[in-house]
Image (cartoon, rainbow, N blue to C red):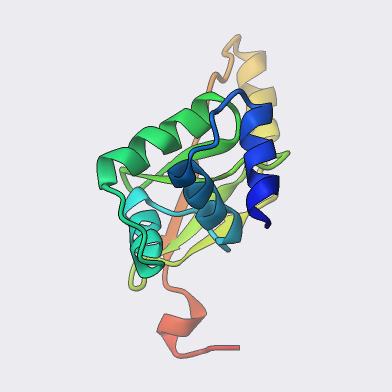
Length: 140
């Protein structure tokens, strides 16, 4: 994604497009999975960008507050990604920490049951832990 495109996206969400914010957004945009603030910092440092972890966290929270990114909690740790149109959950490999998106959430079935009992779901989170094919030695 071009630098100017990222600036436009940030500006359209009333976020000043500083160099650090643009670079954080680019890292999130390129990622194939959600990333922790530490992983984002490592990606920025690999590009020789000088930024501290507190700045990464502040900007990620700003992105979440302004609807650009979403924050997920997996195994009590926060992960961030660019906001998509639908919610989703993750499978997490306990050996390599790879995260794979679970797209088809069946929470609506549970919600129907809870509605019959006069309960309303306000929020939910699903984490599935196991071992990925790579760690099992069954790479495709």
